[in-house]
Amino acid sequence: MAEVAALPLSPNPSGNSLKGRGVSTLARTKRSPAPDQVLVDIVDYVLNHDMQSPLAYETACRSLIDALGCAMEALDYPACRKLLGPIIPGTVVPNGARVPGTNYQLDPVQAAFNLGSMIRWLDFNDTWLAAEWGHPSDNLGGILAVADWLSRTAVATNRKPLLIKDVLTAMIKAYEIQGCIALENSFNQVGLDHVVLVKVASTAVVAKLLGLTRDEMINAVSLAWVDGQSLRTYRHAPNTGTRKSWAAGDATSRAVRLALMAKAGEMGYPTVLTAPVWGFYDALFEGRPFQFQRPYGSYVMENVLFKISYPAEFHSQTAVEAAMTIHGQLKAMGRTIEDIRKITIRTHAACLRIIDKQGPLNNPADRDHCIQYVVAVMLLYGRLGAADYEDNIAADPRIDALRAKIVCVEDPQFSRDYLDPEKRSIANALAVELNDGSHLDELLVEYPIGHRRRRSEGIPLLEAKFRRNLARRFPASQQTAILEVSLDHARLQTMPVQDYLDLYVIGDRI
Image (tube, rainbow, N blue to C red; front, top):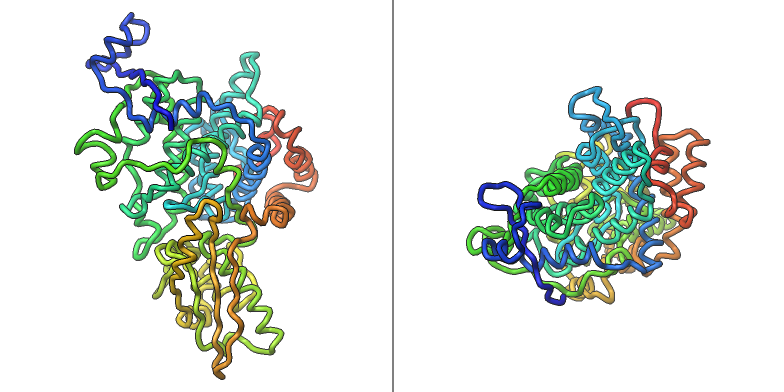
């Protein structure tokens, strides 16, 4: 990215804001270093990039409704519902942000946690895969909570509310920040969870919605980098657990909190990344500066991966598709899983690193991140849904017996194609050997149904997924009202934020 002359904004040593005190930029420059270029590039992109991509906005409309649909499905699960609502039971915030699918009206920080956790709970929201992986719609919790709160406050004071197009613009930019950093920089290799990028991206775009100045935005983004970062241990044995389902809600809500602090005048840390010894690079990234493949634009939203068919970790999606076909083949042959001697999965390096698991799986969070488990369930039952990770299904001894017959091996070409910006494949190939020594033809699926290369095939299924999820929470008339707006992208973009979210309110708490 082009070098941009940076104007630092550090408060004076006493901690009091310099705003309005006649302190010149030159004086401030003498007292503090220029901010890291990474901070400057993020903020200037959010402030100045004129988003003109019709494809990005069209895809963002679909990402919005898909994320909200995922949130509605999550409300079926008590483990999710118990974390929702205000911190103090019964609290209602005047002009607060609505939590879709409930009648909660909360402060924007807590509303962001609620919605962010709901969106992410079942591992069914959109995905981005690169050197680092993640789920860009995790940012929607903070974006939508702040936009709704600002809009309700504006209407209460006779000002114009934000429109859904403002939400979509913030989404596109948050996706781009998270995704572009992820392209060349692996946080998992140093033990950090990808939600650090949710926190950074959400902070930047929420700060813009809140009206922060450029310098305040740089302060806010620096606070996100200097903040405590989550360890990935809750995604891996022996500690796999439900925090992986609310970690993104925590990150996007923390972003709202940090942006509000910066708006109140809290100081920033301009060399948070590059400071020797104590900066992010030296302390947490093995001394390596971030690398960038491309400038910020709209690439990530245009190429985002939708989880359409199966609520499973994305690196296994093509394996599950292949297993569905093999299930049908076995049935047509009059064979069952008892006839299987061995299954070999040719796969890519990221799959081996994240979801190639042997041994006990302790809970649903463990099971939905195990390629052997999801393949076994599909071969056994001919289906894979969120309920298939629960204890009553996992207790079927045939699942673990089949898991023990599944071996994963890396295909180096698959790993290269996974990182190729022109391909971004997520290939898996399943080869089945039967007890009588015969083999089924290996079945290769390179691109899952939610990939950009299969958009025309996937869009009707994505909309069907949204319809199913609405039906979980709302009566028919309310479903119709939501669908009429949500599937008309021109109308959706011009709708005030608070009016759209009011469509998702129900009469009871959850």
